[in-house]
Length: 501
Image (cartoon, rainbow, N blue to C red; front, top):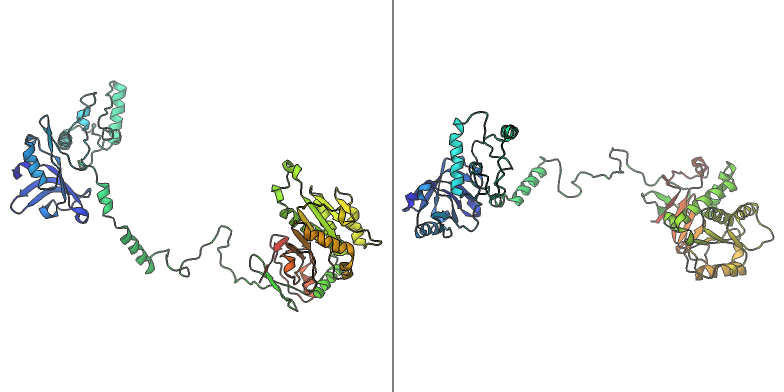
């Protein structure tokens, strides 16, 4: 009985360790319980040896893929007895032809030769397909050179087993067919008559072992990249970073003769020391002697302060032609001194950018010339000036700019209008921006959220909020004359944030 199955094409599954083999049965030994295959394929790849032998204990599943024509009329009982011994499922007989029923049976693939004989959809058995395929290879030697079979084309019926492309006639169609055969009809040396077992082949790939081998090779210096500790990895750069080697970065480039109480740093890490009020006043006097007049300083500080205020108010999201019904409102509290003139200059630029500005400046008998000049310019805008705190808005505004305090006019803090303005700013729930506030030793009455310093910062207290620094155009040599070794920390900006170290 065992010898009757010689020549059958079978698929033997030996488990995850040995894999899947396909081939034609060459010998069956019932005594030693072995089976031999010739022209074997292991996991879809042709073996180097011409024949392999398996023991019954190594076989987990056996599938019969092709039965010789002379052996296709066995009874169900005979086939079941044979296949059950090798782990196959029983077979059934229909119309005198044996059909295998394994757990995962191969798809019936009709042969191209049979499809070309008829234009009607047909279905063929795997045995007929395999025999026709073998006949083609055996007869390929006797075929004309200009006619070649087309086995590897996607248009074959292997994709749709029950669908046939109608055969066309005519000289033109014949030329197209000949051209297609010339292009796609090269015969391969050997084509396996079973589908490639992708799942079985993928199961043989040990992903963890391969990655471990790659890591070992890289750690030994054979690779260009490393997955080690961060200190061992090559440096990575962003698109805006310089990849060329340069000198070490010096973060302390500003040196002052008398270090202040506090030190600040920029976003890039540059250290900006604070200076005393006396040194700050001396720096402005030297700059004025070199041509940086008070008017220039007021204009520069007003532009920087207004630019920062516009950003705090919402920038382009708030100030655009389609949002004219929600114009922001800014309350400007100024005193009769140069710092008050800086606030008036800021209010003029804000009014020019469609911001509703309300300026509080009490009626004094005499004002400084810079204050008078800035006030005259402000009156040419749409801004509103009031002299009494009662005329300020009762509802919260968008921003309060504080320019009340000055070291030279400390007596103003005792006046009723000053205390009323401080109370109004603290009770109003709007955020407060200080422009050039006094140092830490002078207690401020208004709690601010931001403070803008000029040139170099002073040592500010907690009531000053977050500190910002603006460039008012002081030349580098002017810093050198007062004993400050200066290097600009502003980069491409005129206003930068400072962080307490």
